[in-house]
Amino acid sequence: MPNDIDDVVEEILVGGPAAEDHAAWKRLVAEPGGASAWATAVARQKRQASVASLVSGRPWLAKAMLLVRRAARRLARPAFAPGSAAIRSHMLDATLGPAQPSSDELTVCVDWGGSEALAVPLGATVAVTTDGPSAVWWMTSRGRGPLPTKAWKLELGEAPVVLAIVQSDDAGGDLDDLLTRHVAALVVLTERQQTLAEGDDEAIRES
Amino acid sequence: MKRNAEDFEAIVDWSPEGRRRLVEERGLEIRLLLDQAFSDYADQRELGWYGFRDRDPVAEAVEWALERFATIPEVDPAKLARGLRGFGLFVCAKWWLAQKVGKIGYQARSALTISDIRGIEVGAEVDSAAPILDGFAQRLSGTLKELRDRTCDDLVGFWLEATEPWRRDWFGWRESAASSVGDGLSSKTRSFRAHDATFRFALLFRDGLVDQSPPHEVVTATMLSPCANEAPYRVPDREVAKVMAARVSGPREVGQLRKAGTAALVLGLCALLARRPEEPVAHLEWTILRRSISPTTLHALDIEGTPGLGEAVTALPSETGDDHAK
Image 1 (tube, rainbow over the protein chains, first blue to last red):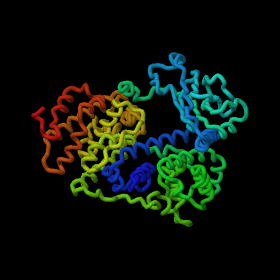
Image 2 (tube, helix red, strand yellow):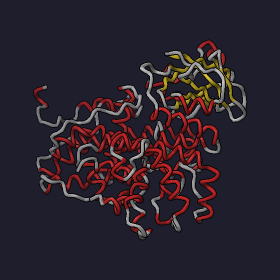
Image 3 (cartoon, rainbow over the protein chains, first blue to last red):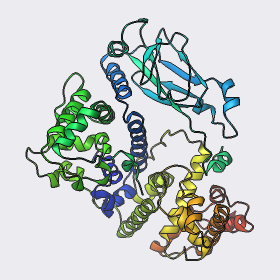
Image 4 (cartoon, each protein chain N blue to C red):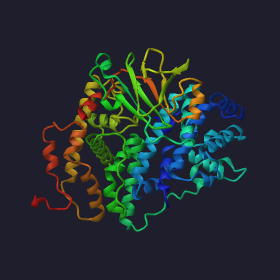
């Protein structure tokens, strides 16, 4: 029965009949593969839920993410990776208090066809590093254009801002058209909420 | 409480007109979610089995699903799994594929669950297991289900991962445990989560361990009640403080009671574990509880400073009975 435990897990997670079915839970416990099937499905569901809430009411963003995914499936991908986006650290000293995030949270690497969210404090600058000869474009709900400086300072009310790494030296034309004809990767800048939640003490203790 | 699957926006209007409008207004969002779901699926299995054989089978499946959603005459959301009564429907590739291969004119009731249409056989007996092991699997799974109902999805995952080598030995799998999922947790954090999960499981596994005293009540309210599926996987002390406002001064006291309660429960478990039973069923049950308590448990629960606890845990008999050899 290859992979069937995946189906059991998925049905439990969406609250289907298996969720209340003791036999399904028994399979999860007594058959091999349950741990990784569960972890994979929960992680996928979290990722999907965060994408759904990110694009909710933002068709322009959903469209860009969709174009990029489809182009990467259709077109040959370059041998090099798109690159990464990093929050410039000197900005952080002023904006972040004791709950300063770890360095992992300040940099994201993207794959061709992928979209990664990066939570950015207001006023901080994000710099994109491209690993090959790629152009960077910006896009918000209000506009879009080339970004030759490859850096974006996040201001109040702008987020989400898309920084697109496009595998093309075409600096003009229409971005949708570019995203259709060339492989690309997106970094989606969201606003970092500066709240101290319960459990931060635990996070610090464990770090 | 909301499950992950219910974190998705609800769909309010399921009428044919409502669904058509939703596709018109939110088509790009829905396409994106379906695109991700079908390509995740295609990473594991073949979409061609379902008749999607275009150059881009994922895009073909997306358009098919969207068309289906907009044109199917009737959908009764009450017959859908709870997690599918909203945008969660668009991330469940299996549901759509089940729709695709189902008979034309299928009865909504039978088609709207994954297992019915895909013929998933749940409830197969554990093949080679002796009746003792079968009963043990039954108890473990009942408790695991209760753990999910009373906490959240991730704790189930931590428990499954922590116990995988144990379960492999008990249930006689040949394959070795799969490597852990790369979710970015440090090994220390991962170990704490595992110990936290096995501890809470132990509290539920052993009936009557948790009583009605105020510290235990706080443990129940914070650690054994449905919570958000994110660290620290507890009902926040401040929320419990509101509910218990008549009896506690505030979140700080709730936190203190929680730690006093977990410390008392660790001691209670230690008392139960002091003698290693010989009888097979009792021995298995003793083993799962024994493995759920270690010095790391105290750190994971942040009670390592409680006097006497460390000594009680290290004094526990070992599993194999070579206590005196150490």
